[in-house]
Length: 215
Image 1 (cartoon, rainbow, N blue to C red):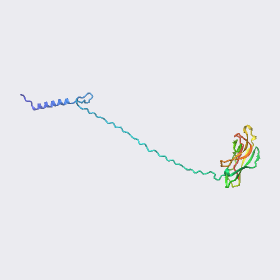
Image 2: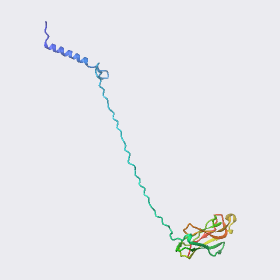
Image 3: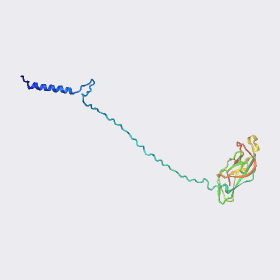
Image 4: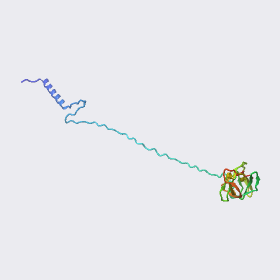
């Protein structure tokens, strides 16, 4: 019987080990991806995707502060004469070409000194509580000077009334008038003063004018 040398025996063992190793390894496909051998375990790597959520905190509401200013109202003419402390009458009329000049007389019937300053308001009316007839009196020159009227004293303002019969009837619209509606300067109160005449109902006609109060 022929005995093998130790070197041959070692080479044979290494060859058998190589064959066994090649059988255990899986084959490689065309794309270079290793296919698992039968009975092997495929390991899958999952990529975790993290979504960042941004939370917006609402800003604090703006607080609005309202400032209320208190305005103290002072009467512009605290010493003015009011209609309740005046008696209004007509003085003696004087004629002029096409017009009459009539003094408005303001008598202080109150218990204090009061002031008349500026133009009174004057218009024709159809009666004590009747409507205005035509245009109100226009302001006609003069100097506005404060007039202090003591109790029982008087002040006057001149009113000029046009003789409306001098206007064509279609332009004037002649209308009977019972008197004047008179407002003292700087007052919203008024009084009726009788003065029967004829006025123009058409507002485009200048039928009255008035001057400031004088002492």
